[in-house]
Length: 473
Image (cartoon, rainbow, N blue to C red; front, side, top):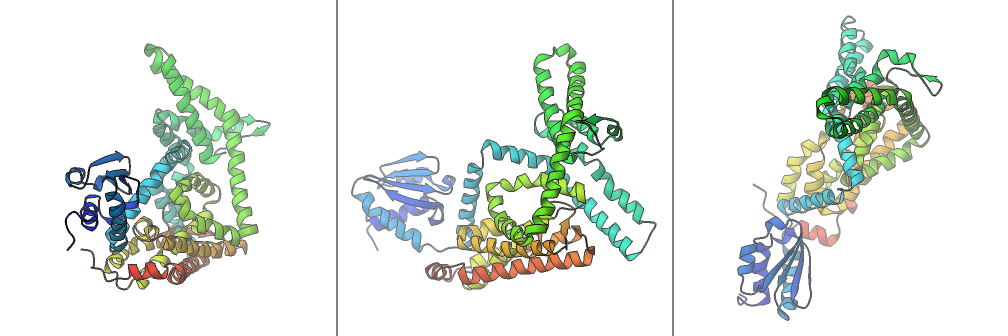
């Protein structure tokens, strides 16, 4: 046994007080200090760390801890600490710590004005997802009954149930936009309602007659954002005694006129361009576009940029009845599931990690990938890359079939994986659409599994990870 003041004993005493080996991202030493970058500073036991006789002081700087050990001592303790970290078992708990640290780091990096704005735009649409899912499934049921020529009297009723929300989705978008950006929600809904009012057909803008619903959710979003700015401007300048009358009137009047004579026209052009772009992309570069979209979606999620796609999905659903992009992006989850299965097979002796995969895999099959991403593949490193490869091949397959004329779309945003089947819709009937999507998932599963099995681990990492571990409680 090493003496209590030996470098090995000091390193062994420091390690648990710093949160364990899994909490240490990097360790360096200067002349007198041990500089440690930590995943989670909250795991550090500060008082106990300062109480160690070998520790002369502790300097805190965010995720960095500088432990003062003195000249000579730090040069001997640093390699011992590095050896203990390298020898520490890789368990599910350690992977979870790494994943949580990565998630926190990404959230910190994503806190830029542009990405924060995208998050707020996403917050406008996320509350609408339950209604989109419910109405999408009802619409699918109505279409199925119509194709089977069953219960003909019920089909019109199901169509009305499914279409009512979609016909007024602009109003809900306007309401949520004003609520999210600090305006009066009902005023946001009021100006957004202008875009779906049937009487707008009697208004001309830029030499063209407007159409009810022109611009879709993009027009409603822009109108509500403008209404919020006008309302805040009025609140600052209108006397309090007149505020209750003047502010709502000016908000609705000014925003309404700008919406009719500018925003609806511009949003209509943008929405039409999005539809044409999606059709052109998959018609001319379906396999390549699907490969890129499916392969990059997991990194987009990490960077927070996937939120920019939510208005695009909603616009496509409003225009064509389904989004052709969503099933392709869902292939990223298939690649993730395949990668997790390969990790499970390769780490036969690591009962801890295998237990985590067994717990998270059902959610992954249903399209909820975060437990597998942040609990398994991303902390391991290479399996995250090979999961992206699986998503790329699955997306390329679905994109290729789109290029050949078999469109596969989803009538709602939110679900993916197996949970997307009830929301599928295409141009060749539900059976062929579901078959293409199922084959795409299979391609993603198999490719993600094969890429991870053969290329997901180096020899040293596999030997380290495959050492016998206890199963998690």
